[in-house]
Structures are given as structure tokens and as C-alpha cells.
Length: 427
Image 1: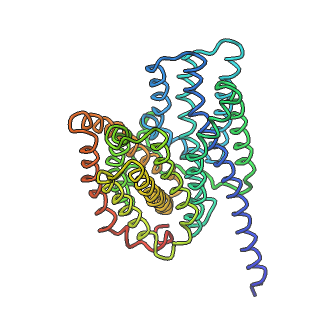
Image 2 (image 1 turned 120 degrees about the vertical axis):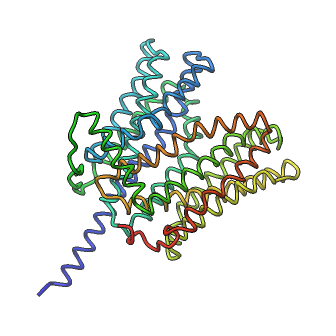
Image 3 (image 1 turned 180 degrees about the vertical axis):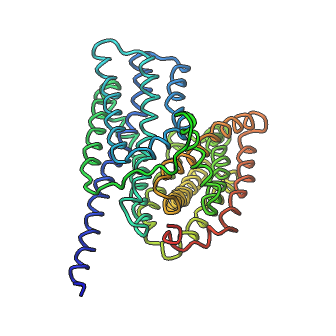
């Protein structure tokens, strides 16, 4: 006869252990997110204030950091899937700590140069991708399917909070100790993150790489990438999510690229008012991430559909906001707040559905494939926005974005995705 009391006690202990391990992962990811905010501001300020870099050099520095998010994303997804995810996160944090600490050390020795900053920016971007892919691939092995949405909400809440508060904290730190030396605190934050992730006690499942592929190393890598993309296009829910996400992000990028030009030249907003408008998005994202798990009863597919519809509706409304500057700023802040709520909610639900529908050995490659699909189209969309802004004007370009964004909705509203009630259906 089974001891029911002992069984229930084991279940409770197991759940407590999962919560404790998730909290350790969450602390590590949160510290890492804030550390990345310091890096993203301190590196270009080091180039400008310490090395007297030109605008072209600063632009190249940003390009080298972002290159990892586009050029290497698919390959790094293979790396994550071929290795245990927790050691990959720890290695990424330790690597970022070493790279950031080298900047103030080289500055102190009088040997810091732009070539090192270019190399450091590229490697820091690559390691940030590894950490992001690894923690998202690791989460489904740490939590049950019914806990994924709540876990992703908490992780996204700290990412959104770092977007809002991180630049301000980074600026204050840089103001106090100067740009190169602010990176000492940044390096320390990555070490703390590595220690927090290392303290997770759950045993990570063994890595399974799927069927073996004949051929050399390069052929095997491309075969692994192909397997991830093929699974995305075969799986009906993932296929719809990928199409909707790609279309939405193309037109959202057009809107975001031209919005600053529109705000200055058409809406006549001051820099502080523009900053306030963008802060509204971050605050909305924090609010959505903090409260999303309470709305699960309506079904994850319906939640995703609402997020897409509301997010698209905000973009459609932007070109038609009028009134005096104060009134217009208030309306834009409100719209960006609503957009933050909707888009961050949709991102969390989409990530959770993707994790639940993906086998463990493909988690890194599927996440990388989605990231590449969005990231690869972003530079094209930004370039198109610039050309359209010069040819037809900022407001007309916003109207183009407003006209195109509804094309993302049918992939969610008229497919199986909207009918998914729980992520358990996809596991």
C-alpha cells in the first residue's frame, strides 16, 4: 500500500526545491540584465570620453556588439543545445566579467584602445546571446509546464525593470566613478550572477543531440541549424508564432525607427518628453510581467491574441494623435504604456508556448531561430523606415507601419494558436 502522506510530502518538497532553484536562476538573470545595461552605456561613453572616439567609431562599436544577435545567433543556438545549459550560463557570466574588467585595467595602464573595445563589444554581445538562449532553454527542465508562464513572467519583469531603471543607475555609476572604471562594478555583477546560477541544486538532464549526422564539423553544425528550423516550420503552433512575430516586428521596427524623427519634427516634443514617452513602454512592460499570471484562466492562446490586437491597435493609433504638445505627450505616454503591457504580455506568452512545444534537445536552436528571424529583418526594416521618412515624411511612414501591422493578426486569430487553453496541451 502506498503511503499517501509520504507521497504528498515528496510533492511539496519537490515543488519547494524547484521554487528555490528558480529563485537562484532568477536572481542571476536579474543581476546579469542590470549588468548588461551598465555595459551598453559604459562602453560607448568610454569610447567618447576616454578615447575621444568619432561618431563613426561609436557607430561601429554598436554595430560590432549587435552583430552577434544577427550573424551568430543560429550558430550559438547549436552551441547551447550541444552543452548543458547551466554551465553555459556560468561560463558566459565569467567571460563577460573578464572582458569588462579588462577595460578599466587597460585604461589604468594607459593601454586601452578602440580595437580592444571593438573586440570586447563583439564578444560581450556573443556571450549575452549565449546566456539568454541558455536560460530560456534551461527553464523548461527546471519548472513544470504549468509553471512556465509564471516563471517567464518573473524573468521578463526584471528584464523590463532593467530597461527602465538600468540606464539611470548606469548613468549615476558612470557619473560617480567615470566610464572606464564603472565597469569594475559591472564585472562584479557578472561574478555574482555566475555564483547565483552555480548555486542551483537541481540536476540538469543529460544533453541529447538527436540523430547523428555524417560529414565534417561544418556540415554537422549546419545540419543542426536546419533541424531546428525544420521543426519550427513543421510544428503548426510554432509556424504560426514565427510568421506573426516576424511580420509584427518588421512594422514595429519601422514605427520605432521613425518615431523619434516624428516626435521632434512633427509633434515638436522635447528630448525629456520623448524620454518620458519611451519610459511609458517600460513601465507598461513591468506592470504586464508582474500581473500576467493572474489572467491565465482565459487561456494562453486568447491572451496572446489580445496582446497582438492591442499592440497593433496602438501602432495604428500613433499617427493620428494630435492636440497641443502637453496633450499629445500625455496621449503618447498612455499609448506607449498600453503598448508595453500588450507587447510584453504577448512576448511572455509566446516564449512560454514555444518552450512547451519544443523538445528539450532543440530548445536553444528554436529560440535562436526565432531570435534570428526577428533580428535579421530588423536592419532591413530600419533602413526602409529611413528611406520612407526622407521620401514621404515621418507621419506618412508611421501610417505605412499602421497599415502593415494588421497583417500579423490572422496568423494568431485564425489559427490553432488562439484555441490553445494551456501550455500543457503543447508539452
